[in-house]
Length: 111
Image (cartoon, rainbow, N blue to C red):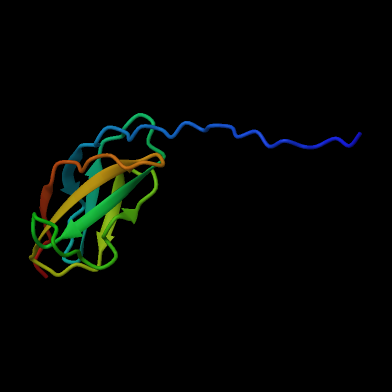
């Protein structure tokens, strides 16, 4: 008799999306950068950041479109224009993505 191997599928539970984090007021404003701040969410393995010139996020600034910013609670947004309003929002990620946070309006300093 010859033994035959049979593959057995093991189901891996996909985690539910984490709760949305709360975006907090920006800090460390300069003429070309601001720090985007947020709260932590239980179960999140990383966070995603969007930055736009409008609060509708139709277009994005530089690389700040679903940018993986790791687990830091404050992330420097650089390469910005002086004396300009920007908007940012964040999402938590754990294999699935949370809803968007609230939107924060930030302004860079004049030159």
